[in-house]
Structure formats: C-alpha cells, structure tokens
Length: 193
Image 1 (cartoon, one colour):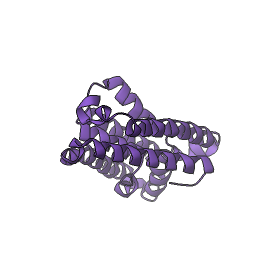
Image 2 (image 1 turned 135 degrees about the vertical axis):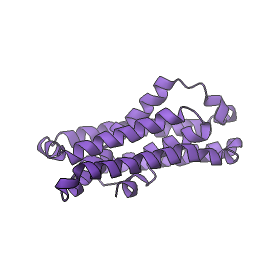
Image 3 (image 1 turned 180 degrees about the vertical axis):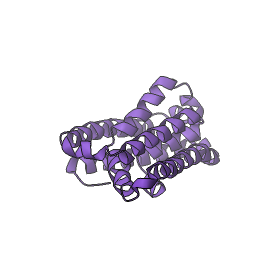
Image 4 (image 1 turned 45 degrees about the vertical axis):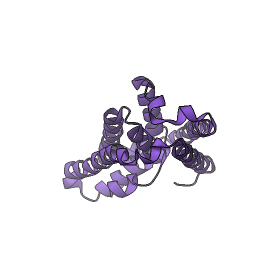
C-alpha cells in the first residue's frame, strides 16, 4: 500500500530523480524523504489523523503554502530550461549547498498536503483495521518508503548518459515545471492528486 502511494510521479520524486542524475547529496536527500515518510506513517498509525480532522484549518493553510512553493519551484525549473545551456549540465549545479538542497527537499515533502493525506490519514486509517499489528504495519510501510526512495535516487545514475546532453536537461526541467504547476493547480482547485 505504501509503495503504491509513493510511486506516482510528484514533486518530491522529480526532485530526487534530478538529484540522483546529478549525483548530488543523493544519500541525504533519500534518507530525509524516507525518514519523513516513516515519521508521518508513525503519526498515522498512532492515531494522529484524528487531530488533523479536529483542526480543519490545517488543510487550507497547507494547501496554499504548498501551491505557492510548487509554483515557485516550477518557475525555477522553467527558467533553468529556458536559460543558457551551461547551467543545464549535471556538473554545473554540483556546487549547490547541502543546506539549500535539504531545505528544498523539506519544503517539497512537508508543504505538500497530499503527503499528510497519504501517510497520516490513509495509512493511519488502514492500519486501524489491524490494531494488534500497528508496529509491523509501520515497519512494512516504512521499509517500502526507504526502498523506493533509495532505488529512485541511486537508480537515476543509469540515466546519466542521456543527461550528458544539455537538451535532455531542458526536457527534464520542462517536465518538472509541468508536474509542479499541475500539482499546484490541483491544490488550488481542491482536487486530489
């Protein structure tokens, strides 16, 4: 179940893919995403979704903050795609500071209201069917997250020959922009992704 929820192409997965292709901070980005998932799933399994249902203001605040961030990140990707080709090489962005990379990763993770729906509410609701196996449920779901994120991050290196061409980076940045803006639009109109 956990794996089926995180496999869909989204903002976080696109970011991990790009970091993996660049070979930049891959371990820490994957670890941060998987750990965040594990913590959110633990919150869901422990019954945190009841708290979220009690405080209805959390949803619109998270939705608008997430949409604003995704619009900005999409614009950033569009500018990279339309900018000069020198900035599109994998090695040219290798100097991005770790703190900035992790800050973007945290924002893509925690400003996405769908992450709470998937991990806290949905996974929490499913785990409630098996109250005596909550720890095992959390362990299996967390293992799925760790497996997926590390496979995506380190598997992306197989795409490096393709991304040795600046044109491939332009296409990837345009696709990332489209994904970010479409998710932002869904958040703003209130649909699920």
